[in-house]
Image: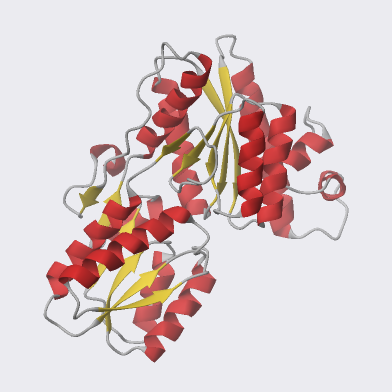
Length: 343
């Protein structure tokens, strides 16, 4: 495979060992297909980064590091690339480091390697755990701003948070579901990808608070630790449906919505209302076909802009704008899908 990149650079981008990358590049046996695909994807990403570096007007390079399912990170990538092309205050390029599931120690190691290599800033979606908090503190101590993305790490010295008000989003979901089902003694299934993410925890807190206050007759059944992945999430939901015959609605905080719907179908159970988060490609399709009742959407391009502004605030304090604003949460139905997503 012809390419100009060092094996160690490909390994860093792919999150693999240099020995594994070397086996893939030289066509040696003993490598899983998914691992080889990660190597090829890493080379593609390095080629995009190299093309961006060839731009003499480049001013700032940032690293976007996320633990999230591919369907969401794909949407984030598009948002950052689109906002970078339109951002007037400076020229930004982004390097993307995505994993659907990563151990806290490996996430911390990745952040440490980015710090040692150097960067103008880090946009981070990660679990709120001590290993990650320590890595964030080391980045900030090195003068590298860290902006948490979608889910916050409030007990770290991070520079800013870019995302929605997650408690308000959870309260909005409770209102939509509660008004539809109030007065009935039913259960609502709440699905989280993992309790390690502060943003998901905040959504759940907001949801439970309003349900308890205004719709106490509606019970809540929670499933977690499916990490937004279809197989694991579907299995958790199937087990919950078997245990709780009164489940009649879903508040999906952590994704995996096709799997959740498939579990309802397999159990021959109706879902009377389904509220989800994020207008990624999968959820957009499910909304258009009527499988989702509402999607709580916030503009990821706004989040990207907040990241750029926060980095500029450290580089050019006098020119930076206000980066404290939260992204607005919009209730989207099949009839008010944002225009840029209908094309």
